[in-house]
Figure (cartoon, rainbow, N blue to C red):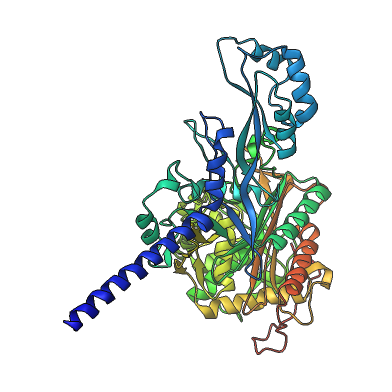
Length: 589
């Protein structure tokens, strides 16, 4: 009898404990998880009944120490609406609103007067994004026919910072605000909030957030988006790219900094850009992201890929030599080195160090068309899968041609056009020992419950052997230690692998301009265990011909900044392949 009594007592106590835990959990969700939302809900007596209060998840940058910094959030304020049926003197009403919130008026004087004359309507919004002080000041006047209502909108604290990657929110096909570009678009499902989200079943919400903390990048639930973009590095890259573009009056310039082993994008930018908080003055052509949408012929930074393909296939070795004649003719087309000068019999390393087109063509010939096709199809035959919208594929049709001249041209970066994201992914395979990784900007989704779900980006494609990539790195390392930046690029405590590229711009008539160029630069460090890979480019710079004149200093500035900011330890003295023979030229294309 006593045993049964004890069992009953234990059941009752367990029930009390369970009920207490559920109450505590519910209070956590109400006060902590959804506290701001309920507060806003209480304010909706001040909100427009037709639109309600806008709600959306946040986007964060991630500092090097893991601290999250807001990249996209919600701002609170007020909007102003008029009721033409009860509004008194429209001129006086406009004057009052303009005196308090002139920057928030969405209608000109004439448009306001016209709106005020529409006596068949009772609600017309005339001003948006008033501050709290402006809203309270106008509301205190209690002008008949003027309504001051609570409003929320998308706000980008960084302004132009990573704007083309973060994206924008605007009205789509219906009357709902939704992500239209960038991360706002790709992760719209996670960022969007349904109108009845506060009243969802408590148990469904509780248990939907429990489970595997590692999820597919395309299968994340509702929450905030955490990016891999480091705000200090992003700011530095944007400033440096802007300086290059302004100094040389380029059509556009851009850059990407990536972890070559994981594909995490640390920073990326294209200049010019826009401010997501000022879309009415933004150039619509800038709303996309050229780093994944536009293709270019990159020039000589393609040579390390040609070299590694030759080494990997076994048709050449680092000790292989060839007779550099300065120019030669293939399929009735003349191919020349950048300076038209012959070098005589020289080893493979000089193709990279002196940026020799004739040498790259030699490697392409040794590879043969079938092997060249196979390697470059692996490198550029598909999109990268980066988590940005509207990604373009490369223009690789020449890989199917039968004339050798097409392969010779592609070997040094002409006649094949790819996106900057495709290019850094392919060159990253040299940096990391032979694997193409999946570049990405988002690392996790932080659910409303507080649980953070890490996204899985494990896709890798092996294209080269570790031995062949190391042999190419030795050649790129020799360039940085030798002629790059007139011999001033070498860092005594850090190995750096680098290559410049200069390509003629197409004239739209099947040929190339003689005086318009696309400059590019690729580099990574430390050379044999790189922390970062950097891709830079500038299109149609004025007054200069070679990338060694426009991008060397910017690249080295970024390298020194990253070494200091991340305290990257020195690697000089670590056992590595001998980079000899040393460079003999003082110029690099």
